[in-house]
Image (cartoon, rainbow, N blue to C red):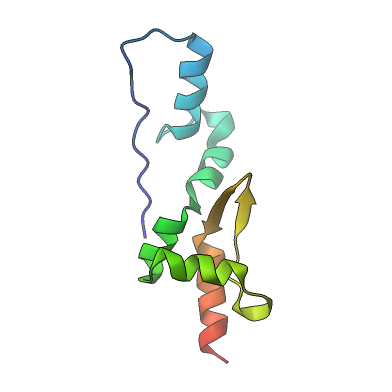
Length: 100
């Protein structure tokens, strides 16, 4: 599954150059040479809706699996109040569940 990140919106208001450049650096499809690894890492993190679409289940099913314990718990990260998923880890989790 390919994840597409929309380019940063431009507004009519003039913000500081630092604010515009820092958001563009994180979301730009072609990151600076020094930040290539960081940008790829951020792009591989999926939201609840994206992982639900990839697994062809409802978002409520994903939330239910986040609350489970043991092997039934879907691998996830919590960034503040936000849940994020690595597709590679979720694929491994699915493969392990089907082999039981």
